[in-house]
Length: 446
Image (cartoon, rainbow, N blue to C red; front, side, top):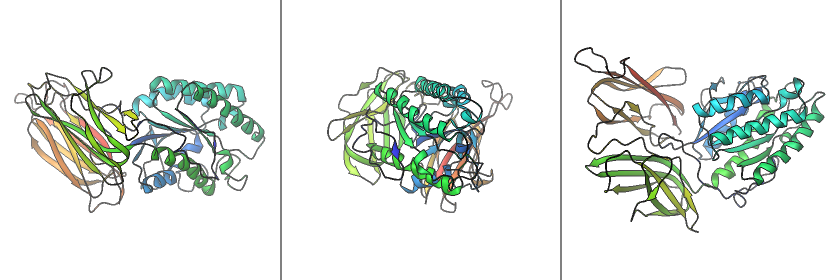
């Protein structure tokens, strides 16, 4: 995969002609319509210092991406910011050095897999006595651990912002050598885009103190991230809104998927595997024509009528008009039960679709036995804004519609609470604890 030189963020760069990419916008464990993006770094990523609303660059970047029509999901173990009208998740850790980020990254990516990482790190290393060489070694180890989790993750690696103290020259030297490190890894196939945040700001007028941007500086950082991100995302051949499967008869599975946009899309073939990780085979006569280039949502359907007892996993093989093939490796359905047993084998809350949505979206959940069910929607402050289900439901797959007509734009959470019914105990003897709870996130965009 070809990559470009670091971007001077005062001049818009065009990536479309230089990036030949596959589609890395979905995660294991079920179809997800969103690009999962992890802001990663120190207090400059967290944004609580120098930013009047404690969001740093993150809110402005999120709003720019969603306004441009990109479906993104910020991920991470932390969340902060006074406004609640954006996705606040991140991995910004105040005071942390590169070695601390290195030690945490594997666990964070296990919990919150990311398709794209925005990495800005190194400021605290110099403040705390580290030298350029040791900091670069630790950044290299961060990139190694990201690759160990997934070689499909794209890292947007920042030449970090400079500072107004005695470490300014060290920061410039670090940024120059960081570019060399990235170039070597890119030559070996790493998915890295170097972003020159150092040149995005004016010094010291865009700083709130000696290291942290003020609001104007954070706004420039957001734009500096947005320029290459939007160009990169524009090269993706399709954006998928949903991908679902349902056992409709003994031996038949119906697959349905919806695209938000398509670019030079010749069509799809359906592939199937018994384990969800390898051994995918293209199903005979499964080609479905695409819609070329379109900004309108398109719906597709295919029935696999040759299913033997499972489990089976499915993925889409997308083909461009020029014959380029993209394997959507991380798209897979939840484990299908045996065709002789259509009752789900576990309790599960599925991702809503479409997502983002306006004004309505569908939510599916699976019950392995009859249960008392409560399904509610909450805002970021934890207030219940809609109760969708509050009654007994039989075992099986259920679907409800959320009407967001009266809701404001923003991020919401929906929670499934299940109390399985058992004639003897009133609890689910299999689980040993009785109640099942699962929460997911959805996004309403007007």
